[in-house]
Image 1: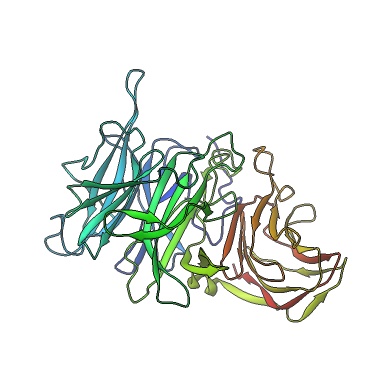
Image 2: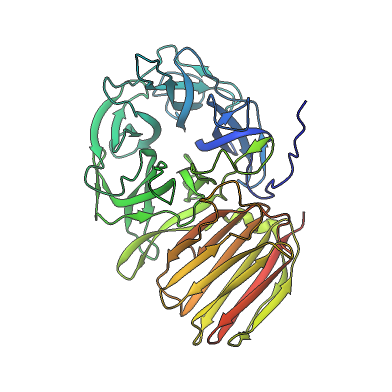
Length: 484
């Protein structure tokens, strides 16, 4: 009998399965006081395999309770990605007594030597807050005669047209369908030709409305994940488009490629449905891995975790609209402030070192660059393991280097440094959240995000803040740590 070290690298603040494999978040929804996370799951092994829907619930999106598997494979295939909705008005006919949840998911039936695989869209419904599910007897409800990639339905109710909208990944495009009842679907439009990045297959779309900060203006945003293509170094990642949606057609405002995250490890993310209107947040969660090495990461008996949940908005930066993302406010209660850093000057060639210990650590730093040519942080996990964050004012880049961060030899691609352009390096606001096997960097109040796995022996022992060829000042900031 194999024995596993199931706790090694296990996160403190991020959802990870108790055992075996996990990938894409599915069916994110809030209903009756609970946040639900369904997820792609292989219950038989810690590598990708026959897909089921795993299930977990939470009151605050940080502490999760894993429940029984929600959806199992059947004669129509394994259970690929999808979404859930609350059918408040019983449009489906499944809920004559009180509203319940409907899952809309892809059935994937493997092909043979003579036939290709088949992907179709199906329904299941629950009357008991997602604890048990009944598959619709008329499945599948949507299929296509020629498209081989036909998957990952994200469904929402569109108030203006009073119909359900489905955005569906269809190879190198996103197809939009509508329905009055979640059962009968008709094609509305197709988006994607000649726009955005096509470096890999398009997957896991999400379409939603966001408010532009400090204005009453709203825009529609379409997230599209791009699968791994071995000829590109980056692996799998997620792009977004900003534009308008009239209930039938999504129209992007520009053709420039925009990335949700500049790290290697944020993929297939989608937003929660049915967050109460008096809350008003659009909350997003991604799979914290990369298809380039997801099956090889050095956890034992379990694989993969989710990103921290993040609140999304739009911000106008230098006449360009960007999606901004901040960790949800519910995270704050998990940290206790350990050290204030106010009005700290670091001279050229110097560094300030602070001892800090915790299973999770948060750094919040408002840095003024006086004349430095390079500055940043060295996060020492142990005496020999560290992750380095460098800000380069010459190129306006932030760089995360994890080549010495711990175990890295499972993939040649893992040690490559991660870079992102930021709009200014004269005054930089950093929020860095460090967990047992991840680091998430948010720059300038969420304008830029970089998410990265790391596999050190310990979360953190100390941090050194350094400056080269010039001075910096920490105008204000602090270091916090979790109590557990």
